[in-house]
Length: 287
Ligand code: NAD
Picture 1 (cartoon, protein in one colour):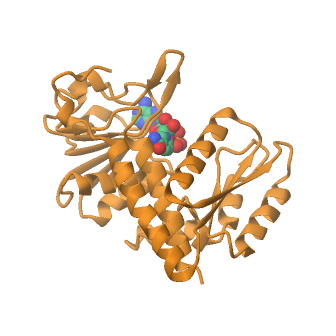
Picture 2: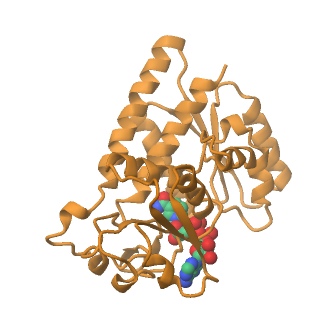
């Protein structure tokens, strides 16, 4: 990735994540001294998918950095949906567990939606529960999906105004695209959501003042698809033998963007930092 001469346009996701983690760390200390409560996160991992294991490990490391007590709950791949639901039910009732994270994807014979809905909304660290998603839709943002929340925080930190701006989201997943669009609408941006069936993607991306790309397609967005001065968040991750790639042709697109996230080191660290914020929020609200 070469961005020589354009370094000032790169959004430093790691530095932003550090800032957020510092806020969480002082919140944790405050909660411990005022109420004697240490925030606790229970992570559930089903099976032994290496990528999922790595993601859980990264989340546990972040917990260590900010003083959150993380507990690992492992189920074998051949466990049943009932086993998983029973585990979640137990964690819902456990007062020391303030928040629960179910690492996705689950092995094929599980129903992830049913499992996510079994998590108590007040302990929903990822913000995926339909209750929390519904609140997001009506502008009441509490526990919301962490990736779009990180994008919003970065926009605030870099002083990017959203009101009246054209925000274009590429990808309409429940975890990134849809909640991202809702957060932009909540801030009075004019929002377009594009996806794999969008006819003439470029027509939309060229209009973007703020562009969030979460398709998982390496270098989907080329320089001729964006306008000068655009602010870009590249959420996509494509792993290849020689490295990790985003959805944006970074080297060329940076020449037109006013701000852009790199891959890696952009959106990823912010996502985990926002998860830490959620765990603290859950603990603060617990009785
Ligand atoms: P998904 O895989 O569930 O859905 C992909 C979305 O992209 C769909 O809406 C699809 O219609 C759209 N899409 C696919 N091909 C397209 C194309 N050619 N043109 C336009 N739209 C297209 O999405 P997801 O779970 O939101 O993940 C998207 C990417 O973001 C993945 O690479 C994932 O690994 C990554 N991701 C990164 C983070 C992070 O923290 N950095 C978090 C979540 C997801």
